[in-house]
Figure 1 (cartoon, helix red, strand yellow):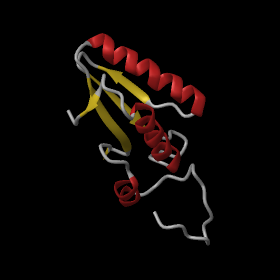
Figure 2 (cartoon, rainbow, N blue to C red):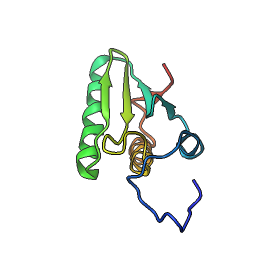
Figure 3 (cartoon, one colour):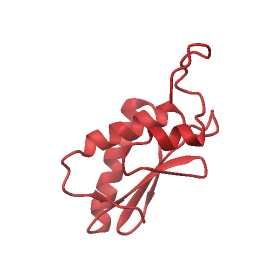
Length: 112
């Protein structure tokens, strides 16, 4: 998204679908106004442990995703409820989650 000095920067402003598609990190997808990514695991407990790490990071950042735990994968959805869609906060949180998992050999992402 190009910066426009007339509107100023507001990380809580809802982004357009085009902005989200252009700025989303690799491996992340947008659908129904949410930014999401699926991570697959060998078993249920690996997924649960991953979800706990996501929750810990969310607490530290003060921006919480929806976490859906399935048997062999976990879906993480970012969405800013107050804005009614994806904001820069969500994109930043997705990048931070990717950074947290860089080099992690327990989980690998795939679109379900």
